[in-house]
View 1 (cartoon, one colour):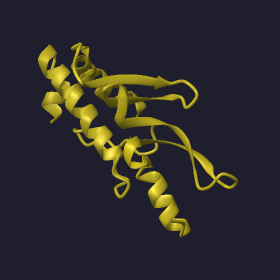
View 2 (cartoon, rainbow, N blue to C red):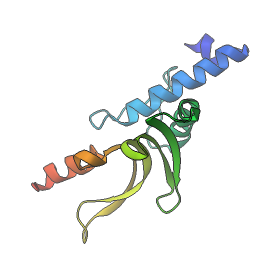
View 3 (cartoon, one colour):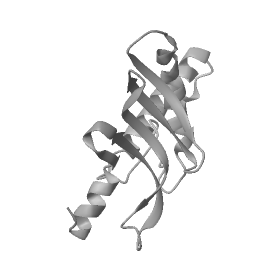
Length: 142
């Protein structure tokens, strides 16, 4: 991995950056593993990893360029939540969101603001998965 990461070849640099970003984003979505590392093994715990989410989103954005398709893929910036997300749409309705932004967890009155990657599936009532579900489970709330 070190040779790939340190390569001066433009194609090697590009593919490493994309693969590394996808790896970091998927590790960050795992609520049961706190050990997030780059492909070369560098630890990223306690650091802001939102730039990797932006890299993943901009890699996938060209998919939404085609016009006239029922399904689309778009990138959105959430100014109030200070984050961004990648959304899959069907007939302009959001069916899946992979987001990374601030949100409240732990109840309306006693909750705290966190900044985490998460998944939203609006038509299934899934919001900020898995963080809300884990929090409700810990608090004994249905």
